[in-house]
Amino acid sequence: MLATSFALGRAFAVAKYDLAINIGIAGSFDREIELGEVVEVTQDQFSEEIIEDGEELKTYSEIGLRKKDDFPFTDGLLYSSFQIPHSILKKVNGITVNTVHGNEANIQAIEK
Image (tube, rainbow, N blue to C red; front, side, top):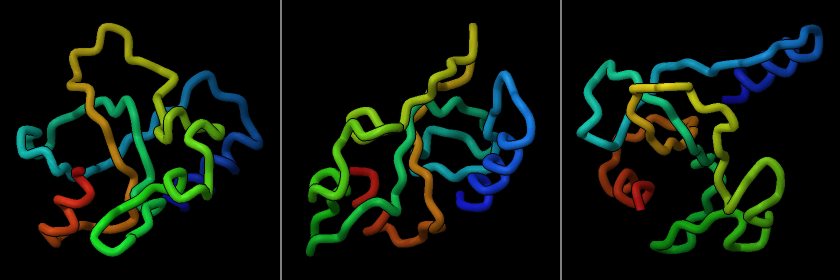
């Protein structure tokens, strides 16, 4: 996530682009999504911006570190400003993580 942001910042500083598409390999908690299936992420959030409070997970905005609508967020989420015209891709919600999840209890907490 940080490496991509840094590289894009450098690229955008020296050239103008009409469109940038972030393509990558991702995992899914949704077992209905087949391995290798291509999807369109229409909203995203950062999982590292979650605070563990005992058994509860809270967002930055829930504890007052940021307002839900502070730029670039809308209601605490990032929404794609570009929709693929006539797309047949399954539209999904995403989370951007720096962690590969392998603990079922943590996966279930994040899914909520």
